[in-house]
Image (cartoon, rainbow, N blue to C red):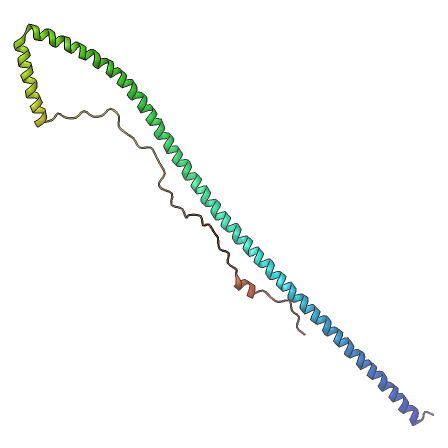
Length: 200
């Protein structure tokens, strides 16, 4: 038959086992807390890495947008320069054609004027020597015509060549490229990012 002392000894042994179990549980809890702290530290570092990556992608996207804007401006300027070149080529062609026509006309007129001057001199000498009275009358009539031209000038002759303007583009109105493109951080996006920290 089990005595009271045996029962007491068993209770003392059980209490010792419970104490050991409690100590083990405290150790496990400390280990869990240490692991949890490590996890939270890793989560904080991951948040920092995530923020750095988001800032990098944001800066890269802004830089690409700025480059795209500058490229569009360059394309617009190149198109405008091409149109201006077309207008200049048109004017140069007209100048070349007009210059050639003027040279041909001037050469023809020079030959005709030389011949007319020679013929007119011959006629004037022959007529003046045979009819001095008519030569005097002609001189007087020329003087009267000169005074009439001063009072009532004759109607001017319309020019043979009329200038025609070429089609040219209007002045280019485009924003001047900036020497420095500022980069702004979207802080509102960073504040809305969820945290990876664990809650106990």
